[in-house]
Length: 202
Image (cartoon, rainbow, N blue to C red):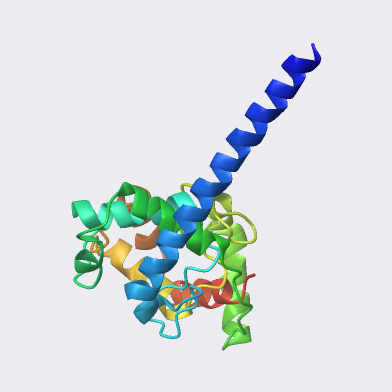
């Protein structure tokens, strides 16, 4: 019995060691890719300094991997991203997702506090008068999203606003089925306001 227990413990240890080694190799590969190309737009820690590019620190791993796969397949179109993912594979996408998910998001001050208060109402309650659903109903009250839906908290206000406009015009070519209807019911003020509010979430 004791021999069996020792053998079982050794097996568990070996399996755990293999998992850790695989995770370390995955993160090492991701760091190599980030240092080689991703950092130019998104920063080494996923905190892009330009609102033209999304902040990825703390973004959900599976969501990042899926977006990268969509860029490669052409389901999501971007003249900047297509060349970046051309030579990458599913393992690379998974590694990058894990890397950015492991980065700690920074807190960001809201530029227009009054505008953000309007956005808070839309984010948490929607607009019952125009049929806009609350953002929080899918992305969570803190904007952290899920493995399927993106983390919104702390995102550049202008980036979020641009994505809402792209959904409205069907220029965003993936995830459009759900978001087009929502974005099409938002006024320009609501887009700006909710984007402002989201930028200050942590």
